[in-house]
Image 1 (cartoon, rainbow, N blue to C red):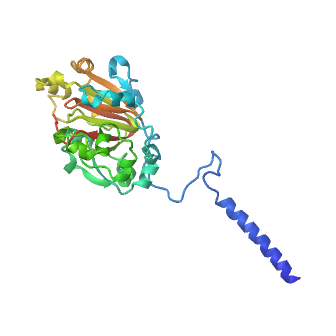
Image 2: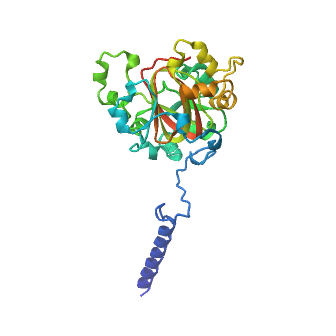
Image 3: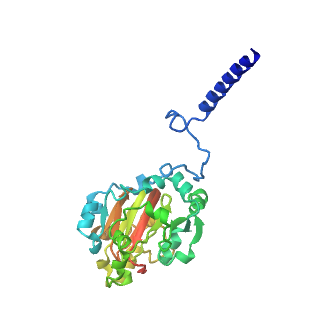
Length: 330
């Protein structure tokens, strides 16, 4: 009789303990929308938990892409590929490029730190990158990791991850597939491209570089080989200046893009604030160039030799592919 009672009590105690355990170990899917579910593997995301929570200078720098200001065609991926726009000397913006990219999930702020904490990146001040040109800045950049940059540097100093010569590792590259054309051609058949007889500087290789920067980061005017830039999170304001306009007049280029009376290099944001409305710059650039906003999911193509500058609007994550590796800095 005593044995039966003991079994009964033990059984009921076990059932109660099991119920308590189940209640306290519910998954994120079990909790209500109003409850925060904190995983045991929390990762450091710095001052702001997500890219979107960080400050955005929308009122100051986002002009809404008025057609009289931007004047660039916005085309689909299909139009980009069928028209082979990368062979033209005209900039364009391509929409919905990242629709099928894993980066949309893998590159949220927390997930990027969790998946790729030890990936090496090069960081430097926007001012310094603009002074040397991004292609020549690689050796001067400070090497760090994605985790360290996001947690400790991104919002605490003038630091910007922008190292075109440091190729992304395989995991990050896979997150950007399918690559936009013409970069995808090299990925699919590198041997055919290499044996095509093209000079190295004319080849689009499967070399992608990562850029991460907070609000108002960005390089002032510089030039290089043809390149495309795709935004995954955030937005960018671009000023582009047609190379034909200054092809035989380098003095015009300097007068339009620099303060010739002040050798101090400005950031992109300060250039717009201090120089854009001075003299005839705005009229010149909006007549012989473009002033556009690039949003998440869009790719902008900048032809070889075009002078251009960029300002981030909010925390911005993007990838870049440049034809060849030749520098054409002003």
